[in-house]
Image 1 (cartoon, helix red, strand yellow):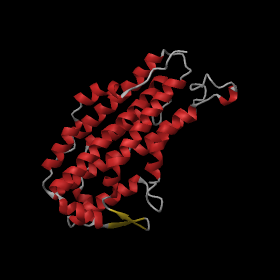
Image 2: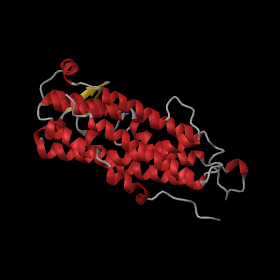
Image 3: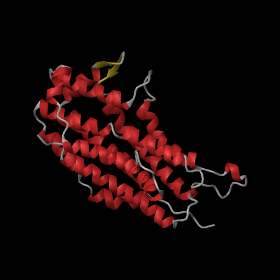
Image 4: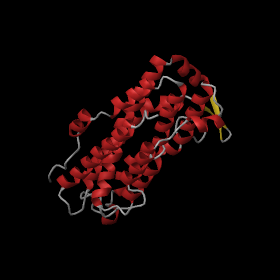
Length: 277
């Protein structure tokens, strides 16, 4: 039996090496000296991130429903040979955290935790939640990027094979770049605004009857995204391993890598507009 094609980190390096989105993120943070500008930068980043939970849950469901597309040739019992759920599980792994963070004692969605961070930032700078409505400006670049995220994950679309595999690569790209993004945000805030970080780490923000730590959303993402990337890469390689469709395996790998590059383009465009007034 031929050895299945695999996606290695080296396959992703060309895109990562040419990518400049994270440089734009650092520049936006550096330029956000005034509280109102920082609140808009962080508000846009938080809003952009809200698109991913729904997209990922959708993609995992689409994968799991393709039992005929992912088959184990070594399984003698035909009715037990489908591996779609196995492939989907590595993508759904990140969705679990999106909808219920595993390290908190109650059900904490990452969206709620992000909202607590934004509210905490506002409180630190002396703004009420009502006043933040006039301060945090979600721009058109953010809204457009969110729509492209949903498109990349295939929300609302019938996913033929190329788009299904492209979605896998799209998600894999989102995880490795998000890992870098949160590390950069955390480093910037700790080096340039240590008093803000200390205040947020000690602050509890009430949402839906629970008290949420105002810095937890940033802190948890400096490590969990790396885990999610490893899982996504494993899922993509399981997709190649168990693929039972009619396309050449090299074409399937190409679709996955195309999606990876597609997300890098979306992230770059979003970051380019992050610092807009």
